[in-house]
Length: 300
Image (cartoon, rainbow, N blue to C red):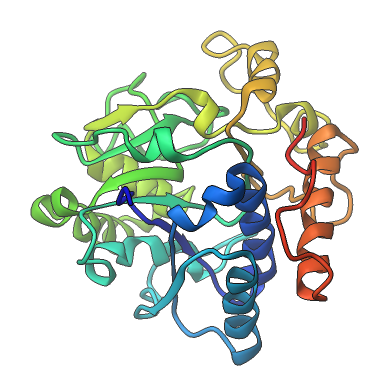
């Protein structure tokens, strides 16, 4: 059997249920090929209920899974708004995963809508990672990402990636000290970490990253632009109409930002309906009703 890089997620107890919804989308997108994938979950101490919930869910759908405990991130790292310190768990991937040279990191607040194997086969070296330009902050100096970029010596207009989907060359990251550089950045210049680990990764990678097609990390802009806190920072770089059109070809739909489809107030939209369909499938599997892939759940 072809040995593909594993999928890596990082969660705390608050995102255990969300991870199960992500797994439902994996099942729908891959069907009988799901066992060809495997998942590693990083955490710094899930409670027993969360641990059992994740393991049982994966077992029932036939997804090979492993949970690995990593040290709690430093209390000096900035945390604010809708995130917990679990946002930094992915920075432990280099130390926690030494048995796989390349991994695909996925945030838990996303849905997989198409086969991931073409992405998993993408060569990363000689750069350290592959990612997608952030839909709302595609370049440095536009928007609120990486505040203080001038003081940091980062040029305006440099591409800025979203860290919710990253194909990581862990051997290269260890060799060049990427994650250590991120931790130094967060400890020494926390005022510049508006988007936490994502700002740290963009600074530490020094623009050495492979640009992936937007279909591998698509934001549901048709819903986000209807939320009261939405701001468009880069219309002249990526027009909103193009970002909305991207939803029709999305392989990964990423509910980035503070507005989440499992919380009250999310804008009525196709993206919300889609998320709810996978959440219902996850509940059915947890109740022992669903034993195979959720039928039709991935249809857009």
